[in-house]
Length: 233
View 1 (cartoon, one colour):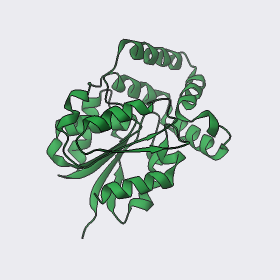
View 2 (cartoon, helix red, strand yellow):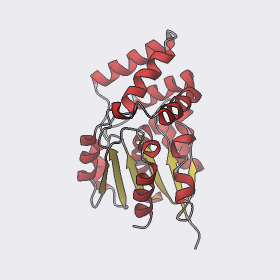
View 3 (cartoon, rainbow, N blue to C red):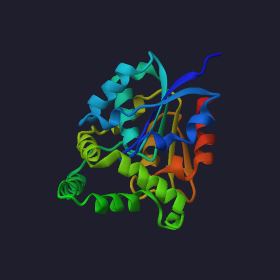
View 4 (cartoon, rainbow, N blue to C red):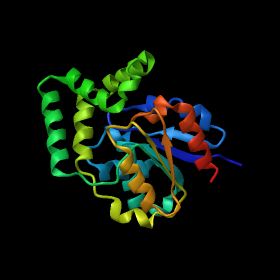
């Protein structure tokens, strides 16, 4: 039996390496590909449309952080094409004024040349304080963020600020859905995942202990188990 197509969507300041540990683990269950459309367009709806244009007729979909926001937009645009949905460390809420001001401030710092400061601020939100001694994780995350770079980061911040509030449409999702979050996620706190899981009929919520925002990198084995069970649903 052929494997189910699976599209993996990275988050803000993330590239294919975000899903590196998942690709071999999920290979027996899914034909997984990592999209990078989230680096190319300044609006969430445009990113979703580009992913749909390149995707097979029906596919499983998983996104982390900004990738989860894009996944929600994809299922809003083409619900019949998504066979199952995984939302990792993300939010269904729309953008609010305080968030707009924070994101605009970070963008202004990057434009002023303070890229390393912004990267450091973002890393502090992505990785829990208890993991700062994990030099392998920190080095891998920083290298990934630097590969994405300033120009793409600015485009991604602009895109995130265009997202719609997905909460009103969550109850219409009917495909098997996994919602996963690190308990120590400071960027998209657990309450946001609990909100999503409570609103989607039949959704499963997995909470990973001693884990922050980059769950796929921080707790790859636990994420792989959760995604494998989701693909078997």
